[in-house]
Image 1 (cartoon, helix red, strand yellow):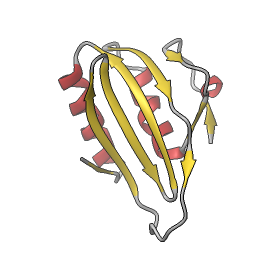
Image 2 (tube, helix red, strand yellow):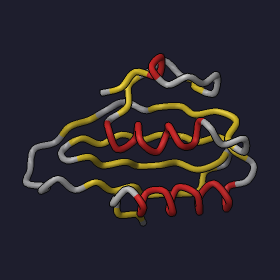
Image 3 (cartoon, one colour):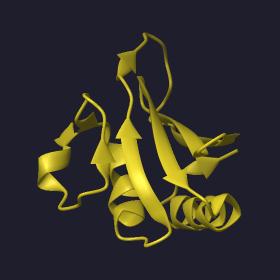
Length: 105
């Protein structure tokens, strides 16, 4: 798990500071995007099951931007992205996720 202190940006908010690897990859990209005003990580939850190494990013619209529900193997994490340009940021997440081999929905 990566802590936000290892990712140089003033865009991080919230009390929780760790990201699962798939979320970290997306957050590194979004932290450099000038359209993103803030990034808030959610609590990491784990579940048992045979997931086969699935890396998935589900994108939903939120009042203040977009909400990412990220799955990495048997870990889940929600990441809230604050932006006024939701469609542009959504397309960036989809493009970069697919380049990294993650599935999106």
